Length: 625
Image 1 (cartoon, rainbow, N blue to C red):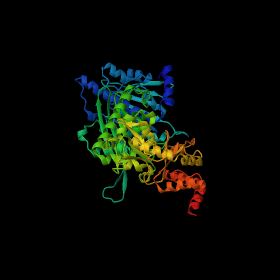
Image 2 (image 1 turned 60 degrees about the vertical axis):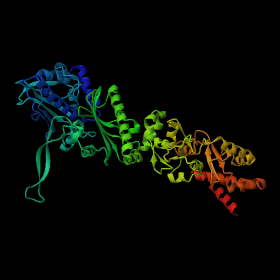
Image 3 (image 1 turned 90 degrees about the vertical axis):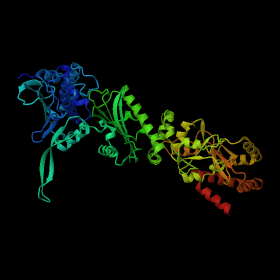
């Protein structure tokens, strides 16, 4: 019996197949099952044009059989089979695709679901097997042939006996090594798991003999092991079913079975597109935030299928970072896959699918916001921070897309509100959208800086997430209304008020200059406050860096001790200021004492650390004495 040699380039490719192309050895089973499905598909397409052929779906199946004792794994199909010539051409020349040739010969248009493209998947069997044999009998032939190979050394083709049309692939599984456990590919539970993972939605039944432990009839506690033939795969994927025939429970069951999360999804989105790029998708917006969501270990991405076969477990390119919380899957016939079918060629089709999915997610979120407010607020409490990060990232590129989805706590409504809702309540004379920053809503409620804005009846948005102010600086304005911090040097009030302040500023210039010198560059200036009503003092800022930004930036690793330009504002109508003026006329040391106390008081209000707590407590004691 003559051993035929692979061509030189095929030898090199076979070596690559075994050692380089596939990243996961378990992929071999997906490839062999896909080839078996192709073989049955070919009979189906033949039947479309050949009146002498009938296609009875129930007569076609794939079977996986494991023989642990002899280390054999068998994959059998009832497909079209191969002639001696086809065995020679398809298996003797690596990367020659029988499926691709079949499509061309039979003028089958793209869009019909024959999976094979590259003709290399079969050789992935050598990643787990020392020997591979293929017994095949072609449709319309009385003869059967056996192809055998131990790898790169070559192959043989000999006549054999086979009763039925189809193909039987036999793998002699390798012995275990220190690094690899090949026994797993003979274990029925592991095989079932791989089939469910990659080939659950192949359209033909994938059968296995499964051992079940059953209670003996008439006994309460005696069990026996029974071997039963079971269909492992579901065949018809949920995304190919009519939406009208599916219930919320069906979608929730799929969510649970695919282990997208341990919660119930807040919302599902079922997409079927039959346009320039054809695809189906089922997307889920989770209710609860995953425990590892804001860690480096979290991986975003959707499951990606090609014709029902899993290609990628996490396709990150289908989701932008700001929608990384979305779970689900996409199945498309139009993907350009690489040779191993494990990765995508980054092409126009993928980008179009991702763009459409992005629009769908935003549209669904806006719909929930409009029609199911409580659900949206629950979602936003879990994932609103991610949307804000999306606004801030990439230099604000996505701000227009995301700003309508944002919500902040309102000083008037005492609940989360959108920018549109804020604008709808704005008085005509209000120039800005006002906001205040702090660690919590309660802390912001007590901020002295909010007094004047609130006194004018203006609504204030509360920023309590560390990302809030950074995101708003990217947005800058919403529908031509600029955002303004209540701690800003210019609150945008009437000119006559500013004139009154200027007069008081001049009257107390010497006192304020003295106080500024006492603080020794800790503040940029000391000024009359136009925002304080009942409190004696507060800090305002001048410039791009706010006090909250200072706290956040300096809490980061390798911080550069960034400081906001602080202004100490004094309420000249407070009784404390009267004491300050009297001291300035009679006792400059007391002014120094009062100035340091007022400055530290302002720091405490802002949640900033006091530079010298001992000095602060001593100063309080001096005042008490």
